[in-house]
Amino acid sequence: MSETELSHLLSNKGLRRTPQRIQVLKSLEKARQPLSAEDIQKSFRSYVCDLATIYRNLQQLEQAGLLEKTFFSDQVARYRLCGPGKPAHSHHIECRKCHKVQVINDCLLSAQVKSLEKIGYRQISHRLEFQATCPDCA
Ligand SMILES: [Zn+2]
Ligand SMILES: [Zn+2]
Image (cartoon, rainbow, N blue to C red; front, side):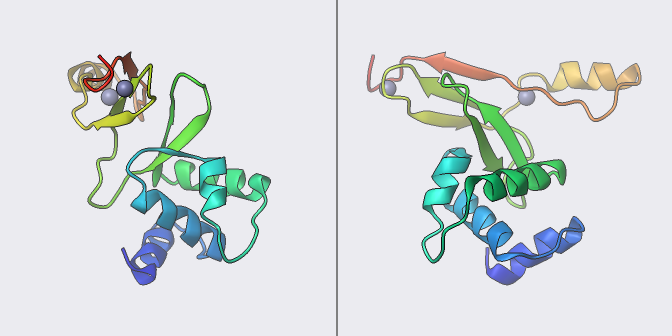
């Protein structure tokens, strides 16, 4: 996505364009797996951005529905860009040995979510991550 497209993404959600937000979105867009605030901080090459600012921006972007937060075995919050062209929701499988993470785009719980919506629950979210020994390590 170009910077203009990223700016549109922000303005569509009522968020102001700031260099920090653009940089956070850019690094998440390039990433092949969810990134922690510290991973994102390393991508700020041109200037230093403190972690508190990055956390605050991640939280705002998550609340706006642009990011999905997830946790792997180390319990560090990691974020993934949700759209456009990326799934709004996904699961992951992490290797216990090499900690490689793969995205699972199919939600196995969509039937469950639908039946909860039927009885009146709204804005349902859930997290489910798999741990395994990957084919390379098995
Ligand atoms: Zn592995
Ligand atoms: Zn799911």
